[in-house]
Image (tube, rainbow, N blue to C red; front, side, top):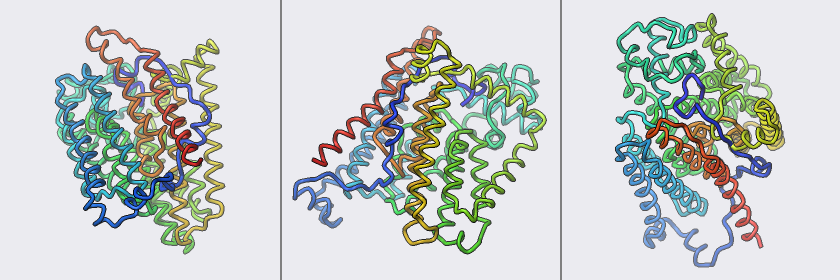
Length: 511
């Protein structure tokens, strides 16, 4: 997210201090690991036929209960008259949903859960409809989206001038201007995001049209996720870990954030490469699918910049003989997207630099290092170095895992795709733990990989980021931005404690 499109959450500071161990083992590459030792009657039930399990009723009851908790939790929170003042309800409802998804993960990995894609998508749609028709209350970024989109539709370059300096050419823009955050700054959203904003603004020029487009893209992301799960040899029920995740529902359907669109293009790029490897096109010399994958990756990176951190891993994942095609597609479409906005791109770079130097919120590691060094720039520099080191280690781990696997070999390409998903999960987790600015919706880049490589730290962090919204209560009532160091600490402690407890349970199960 950016200063130019920041919600009220972009005005403050705090942080999370990650420990090295979660960065190395944040994700399990094989999400279908063997269950812990269990009594004979439990193992018998887990291995029973579906008809026998249905007669017992236990797995069916668990599935029904989880689905009911998800729908009831979202419905209860959506009924609150003022979501900004109902942050305790938000934290409780999201905790219920996250806990239910953790139980689903536990049951599913033991063969006791079987949700059809239709059920997953149906509940995902219901959950999003609770918030689609309500105005955004936890973030005001969508008003910047609409402003940028109307500028593009009107033939103006959104990077040419800030909203405060640009003339409001229409009544819709004049109505939007008081709602746009940081109107003194040029937008920070990259060119592909501007095309999404223009498409959303074309659907009536209002919040509902923009949110409808973003929710449609998010539901498409759920479909792509389940198709990719099948290609990677993973069960469909894992798709619920994203489709029902509080982040995807509340931050996209509720607040209308664009992150889901970028993640959709990222997963499409991964899916195209996986299909190319599995079908043997890389061995047959067919380069077009890999060029298309590069173009899709460029779209992802020019909606939100985070996918650029995954670029080295994608290059490693693409078969060696197809990397030039991937790079050509990436560079070609990237240039085409940048070209129409090229005259004003220096202003975009200025806003990006301002964000990188000054923005901070709910980042425990940043606050801790700044207190230790006495310098904000030094803390940012150190965190950047730690992240780059974590990125290099994870990319090296991915390369070593891929080395013995041959493209086109039966079963090996699915394993390669799971390795890439684990890499993406680790990089996203490292980014969130180390960034000076941890807006809750940033964690969507982690939530998207929960179906492929869910770990306890990731599940916990996708819930604990909602604690940062506590700052909205005094801001709404008193107009005072009051961050709490304890809340920031809890945002970090939740994933750290979950990781530690999982490690203890694993050791206990092994003895």
